[in-house]
Image 1 (tube, rainbow, N blue to C red):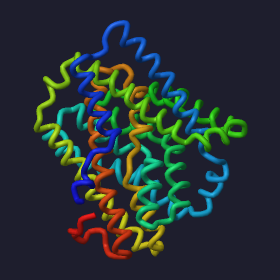
Image 2: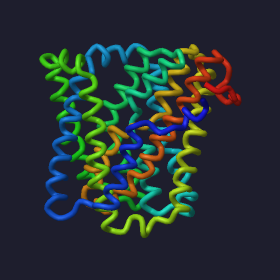
Image 3: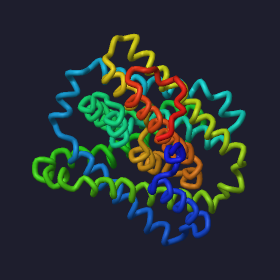
Image 4: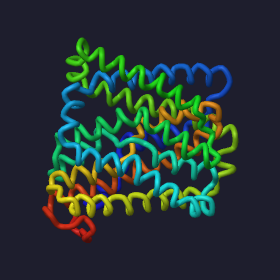
Length: 333
């Protein structure tokens, strides 16, 4: 049924429940400090496991299909940030300052891994290239995202600092590198227990969301954020996707990529990672936890929106072969 395409998944429902819990029972005082420490440890474990998961062969393979990966990286780290800056007049007119900074932050993030690969597979794309491209995007994003945040958000009134950039490299890149070195000994265990990494991803995100929204609610998030600004954030996220996905489709065909590579480019180049983004936000904006809730709201909205849109596009690719993704699809699943 068509309704199945827009039905929230269990993790989205868990996110909404976490936001509701933080709104009704915010964590404060000593318990907030304890939760913050636990969250820091969970973030380090998360990136350690991501490092252990990435095979060295995938990194080397990434060098062989450089045109595809360069196209994906250009979308992720060039096109998106430029679009975020282009939306500045609308952002200042329709959003609160923190929500617009959150939209800019979304534009700096790396691609997702799991969903990019899954949608590429459903659509019949180049899955091996998607694995390499999405993994390399996250690896490069550990370094490049904080640099982009320092350039974009700091120059537009954001609270990120260059000290935060250094902190994120130390607190995320170091565990990732240690995990990759440890893959020699624990890689088999990690590969056999992939759900472990999924639970770590989701659990860490829920912890950060709860602590961030607790601080934001205490500081008056819902009192100071009008409904019109939330709806405008949804519209702005939809506009980003509606611009990027057709642009990538056109670029892939213009530069002569195969259909399988086109699918990989469209799905890997249009995604933004919440698993990496929310932990990064906690470190980069550690000095303003009261504003972190509003800063990650656009990422949560974009996350759900990209899943719904890409599910439809992936089914269309699979069902209609080379038919353009812009065509209307009125078939029920």
